[in-house]
Length: 427
Image (tube, rainbow, N blue to C red; front, top):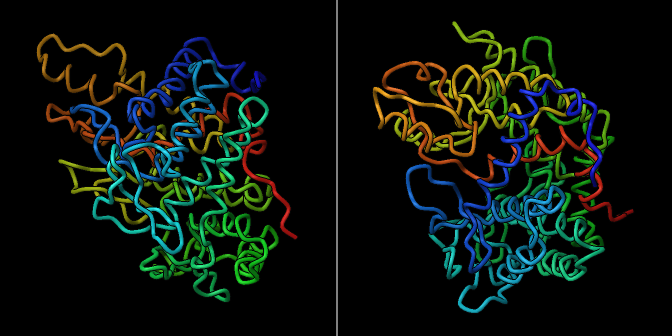
């Protein structure tokens, strides 16, 4: 696939050069976080430490598989298929010395495992993180099916080896179990949220299971999207879950995962409007903050180490310190292509990650270049121009995925995703 969009072709040369650099870096960060012996991917890229880290995220490994598809298309990786095969062999327990922790009864994976041994690192058995892994595997299967059909076969074996029935908590409420413990689903969460992906994969994996099918068609099918819980920002309706009350919003990444990974949502005109609304609400809320330029926005999740505590899923009305996430801007590019100029302005004016120098403070220069080695990500607007600049110490891969997905769609269109997410007929 070599077609490029009109938006990409019409970029001014300076903005296109920035785009191309940030686009490839979106993949390079993933590759820097990959364990070469097992093909597993770290939870995060550490800006001041050695990479890859010891802690694998099963969800990040799914993102890594999608990254290999992008790298194969762009010619950045000549052995992308071989890398995908190693990753899938490992998650299926076929790599010597590495057995990723799974629930013995259902096959769901632990969220965090050791990169080399697969040992559970004191984490829960997670339905959403397993689903992100499976989504990445199926994506790779579709991408490589004409050249390496083995990948598609392995991906479908992975899908089939999971008992998806435990995700169903309450069909009437659209509740999905977040955690599996001793073969049983626990910790139900009502819709709407990123667990739409879990429901989608469950119906692919077990089309004969009536409860799984009913959960989807009663709550998440395209004709039901407009009936999902909503909250208004000003007069803009935005999808939400019912947990937080009448003024509770979701972090923008929640809207982005279904958009790129659930085919009915990617292609739905109804969801497209809600997606535009989520983008607009995010942008407008930032405009209400004092002394913030229009190119600063993006309520995403990520670590705030050394600034406002640890990891936090920022959202409208709940964003400690108002840390912005550039990858959220990228994730919305299919419905707000002008966002590429917001990213360029941020780069040009404040975070010139590839040209920054500081002759008066070599340590500042070192930290700056290390923190943004792979381009824009999470930043504090109020610290950008201060002597005590905040330097992000890590970039979580699952949140970073929005950068790769959005830039890919900006350059090649959403067809890259719609052609690779599973469209298997259910009813």
